Image (cartoon, rainbow, N blue to C red; front, side, top):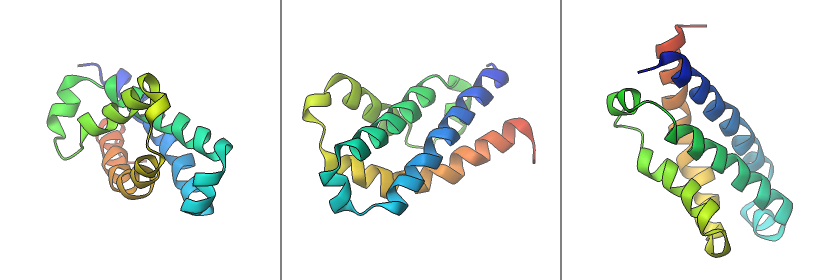
Length: 117
């Protein structure tokens, strides 16, 4: 277990969640379906989220089974390795339905490591 490394990766996750939340709040699903720049931006942040999640220590992820780790890292793998068959509706749903649920969990884990700010 390396709490310092976990802190770094949790911060990367928080840093990826912020623009995801901003992008989805500022755009409609229809705009997302039309605008390839928005699609690429959202996909990029989801990749970062999944990559950082995959680098967290096993100890930390085992202590937090409430987070759907396989889903978080799985979307990253899908986007990176099967980018030509990514379902944009799944991406939008993940960003608008799942990320807001995971956000407080990740922020709580970060506070667990760093203490209250």
